[in-house]
Length: 139
Image (cartoon, rainbow, N blue to C red; front, side, top):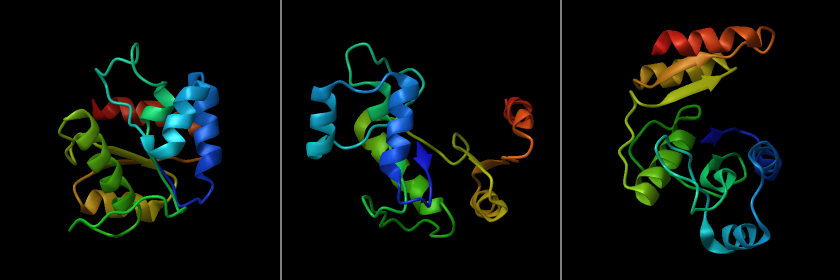
């Protein structure tokens, strides 16, 4: 999932479409007319399903989603919880805090995630080459 405080989620979706070979016109029509977002999860085949970009939920500051659960409301925690709810509902999988990873450039979001038992890595925009080694350390 992509979680952001930005209200420009359509730009984020456009970037995902570009990177992943965007949706067909029919897929986009279905998505925009109640088809909802998607979520990419290992092991889910895309051969007979909508493009990958539509399977990835985006939770931003655009108020297009909600989270009413009892979890933390700090930082991006509600964004993440809402995306998890969608994935679990759509694909019948279980997502846990230990199977989730937040990569963020804001120290406070990292702090909130770690306090809630979610794995998190600080992304330093000045040293992007350090991200992959940090991810590899987690495995």
